[in-house]
Length: 447
Ligand SMILES: [Cu+2]
Image (cartoon, rainbow, N blue to C red; front, side, top):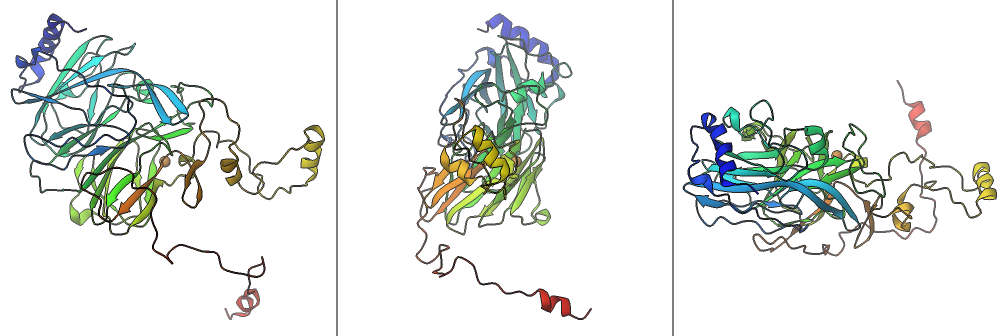
């Protein structure tokens, strides 16, 4: 543990970089709260200071703080954690306060924050406050703006939050490994004027990707391009919480991307637009409507809309291989390969009962429950009220319902579609759909 002497030594080193430092009061380190729960924790409603609508973190939580002489004090502990990606798969990661990603830090424009960072990792680390405008020596770039934090040591960061917005935190120390191991979190700063940019539901998620061989428990940290698990808050569908929303709510989803590729995030049933990035709020005149918002690498996009269309609406990455789990890669395309082809017959002589997987698509692979190694999720999975959903990875459901209570984030169950509003099968006598050949007319059209 950190000794008082060690603590004072640390702050002495930082004395010249922070004019607002209140390091005298900082002599005692606040407790570091910790949890391993994977369900979305209720928002932390502010009990003092300016009012704001608190955020909720999908499958995560908000870091409690304490006030100390005008400073809002937080304590993050970087440490090895075990994270369940979805029931049936646990991964050994590095995280903060018991989880990857770490808890969301939430504060208000004008707050003076003091963030203690204890390193319980086997190697040194730092924390960089991505997007936050602060004094250079608080930026958290190991070697450049501060010494790295050695294992078993605690450093403290102190800065005043000059701007509201959506930010992130992550190491700037052996970065490739520490990001690949899951060290990251979101940092939300509310405007000091509670009426400004207010949303009724304000969700937070950070995207990452991991390369985990089926049957193993550790991500490969040297992977650069070939990831196979695409996560929101280190969870994959069907492990990602749904987003319950009351009909008529103003909804915001703040999406950070610390993976190594972009993610086009698509919403069904609504249009949304980017109202905030990691560089601040987007003026209303500069917004445009979209049904897919692309989130580039190393950025945050807050998508916002009015929930005026009730139902169970998919909310997912539009890269199809990001909305599935591992084992979906390197599968050959057998669509159209005849069930009784020469090749199949030849294989059947060697392996009686052999079935060419994927000759009519891959949906059956999701339904059959393919045998897989331990600690491996099905490639496509999940079920809804009408059958298999056949998704994985970066997919969840926005559940828009009439009459939900404010700050009620319980799963309201499947949507009850009004009668006569669900696609249905027609009573067609023949399996062949009626066709009209328009080829001839097209050819005869004058040029
Ligand atoms: Cu994606």
